[in-house]
Image 1 (tube, rainbow, N blue to C red):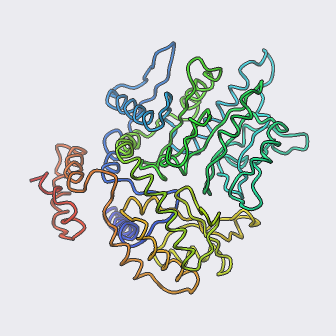
Image 2: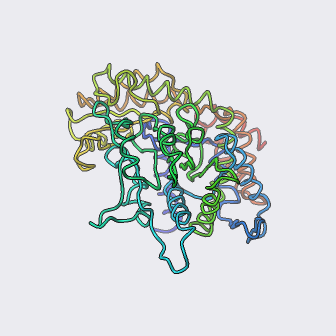
Length: 491
């Protein structure tokens, strides 16, 4: 098979997947989102593949490449937008994934804890860490098997010095603050990691800060907001509650390209000021070289979108999640959490063990154009015997769904899970009612700008002109009715 044949075969598969994911199925995976057209085009613009390494040296920022004035300004503009979003003074943007952002903080905390060691004294690990247990929703990256692996100490029995947040017996998704209040002075953690990947309720940040604020050696309070970064403020505002550092990937509930952010309210006169310096040094040169400048440019565009629509989007996501949970319960599904308020985030958890294996049921749903993922629930033995399905409403909220729209979706979901009914055509028909992205520039305006960007990607060639000309020849409703300005921009 030659290049032409390989290219055409691949493109046909890409087109088929694009149409399926964007036009025919409901994507309910809580860790995903569809970026806007302009964010996607930012990602393939000229900065993609370029370098802009830099670090602070002797009080000034030193760049090691030329031709980077534009991307330097982009990085600073993105930092300012993120400062505005989090209402905090310190933002680090060069980590390219949430996992990397967490590892950067773990490296920095280890360095910070070793700052006063005597000459010749060996480098030590973090003596005690508290986090959410993996089976209770804790993220892989905050476990010893993940990014924490090289940084947590071991006890005399060879076990990692990890304590887990205790959970309530009446609701395994909520922290038991009474037990936690007794446990904290006993284990004296040096690092406390809030945040989950199975995430229904707020974390007890202010509660923990109040208990630890007068300790001689205060713990570092870190909040991994990967899943709820796009809900910062409406769901929880950890920096205002006493967290020292937050991390998060920028493509789940946030509108961005796939990368990460680290933010903090640590002031220059704070006893923890050195921690922020350690974070910056562990990002570069400690963890990154090229920090994917195309996705950085995409993040700036998404930050403009998020800051423009933050309140409206966040409130709708939270309303939609509650509505979907209620509709699933009414349709006969077993919804996890407190019936008075199943969720405070974008996530809805559904127990399906009465109807079969969660892994098999997630495949059945996918075959019927509903995409979610199987999930071990807190009382399961492990991921191999998962009894739950984890869903999220954030992506479909961006495509215009409101509370009432989730009722027919919940009905089809239940028909597929409980009765093994084939609902693929009905799901596809319902999905096509929601084909326009919201909380960004209107399609007409965005398409005109998109045409100009594409025209500039390969200037002095006929690729862009041929692209637009061929696009107009497709003559499909998705192209012509939604992107009329795309053609006027070239004419």
